[in-house]
Length: 308
Image (tube, rainbow, N blue to C red):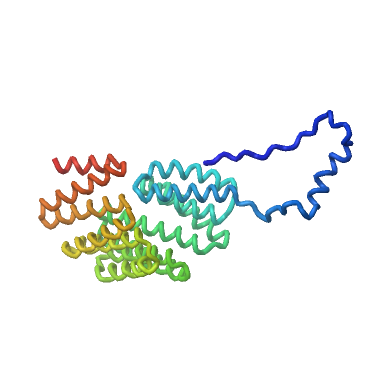
């Protein structure tokens, strides 16, 4: 964070006795009314710009899997955001904060943060970020259902409820393409949880269409990663590998190391599930090398243990 060095004020020496006290007092008023004096801005954005830059830096670190660093940066940004009391910035910062907390496994804090973001968005008449916060909440819950392999009627009922909710949120943000795409990826996860493979891939492809149109390389790669996961869970290993190769191609174009490592890691898992052990080991080795190259040593070491 850059330090702000305020301009030095003029100091009047007592030796300048020729200037009367009255003149000294009225000089600022005179010059402020002078047509040659610079006009004061109607609004100051210094702190908000600094906070936004820090939020962008935190987001970049999170996108590269450096979640601890991202949270450290975000806490500095969060203090600045709170000091400005700017509702849109508060909501967007809270959404980012919730995402990083969830990635760190601090689930209760993440859901609480997203809930506060959506509530403030609604109260501040900011329907788009409020909907975005709810979409993130829905996606996180679907990820939990998938990761814990929760099944049965209760899990299906919750997934169906989440599917209906995300459709409502998508309808509320139709003019915001990026959030609509995020909503469709969330819808894909809901359909995947419900084992509706075709509907799940179709939803992911709706997001893909937006990302490809806007040339969002990393997001396009992630959409292909989601498609690969849908195909893999449905037992279509070859199609899953094809989707992962496409994800890797886009992440290479974006120079997205974390995305590349994640896709190679997933490819190793798919090969393993397909009984192709040699190819699985090669893919896991490649993922470990990339994890190590980008400084994610814990992930690299965990994979290397499997390769021994």
